[in-house]
Length: 209
Image: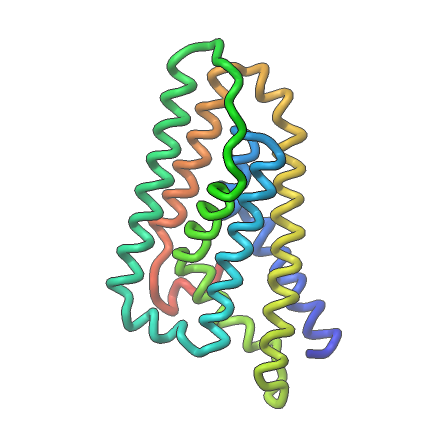
């Protein structure tokens, strides 16, 4: 993979991360609700989830998942239901009382797993990877070129998502003063993540971010 292709791929990935989707909404909501450490754990999970998708792309299994769209869709809808449940729980917490006790820190392993599952069942990122990554790999690069492209894609996505965590963490002090509205904002972000995942379609028409 030459430098020009790597820079082009990095720019495309950065633009994708700058436009919030289900993964970014989940990351921001978790950071606002539980702090920077929880946000970082979620980012590691979503990065692993996208990495799992890239492995499927490298093995040529993305097309197979399209043909098995029914089974994949069930997994996606389970993810949607889970995100809506998180949103409802946060919204309810905001409506319960203006003064809430400090929340106990969430286990990082659970947050990582949640991020991994939400990212892995998102067909939009899967088909984006399957359709666009090969365009940045030369015809003679082979599997090594695809691995290099995947590494660039993941590295830029990881950096961008960590930047979202930093921004959300810096906003936490101001949002904390809003009391119950902070929980409702967090709930709204979970709802947004669920809606984004629900609107993702399995098909080539959904291959663009």
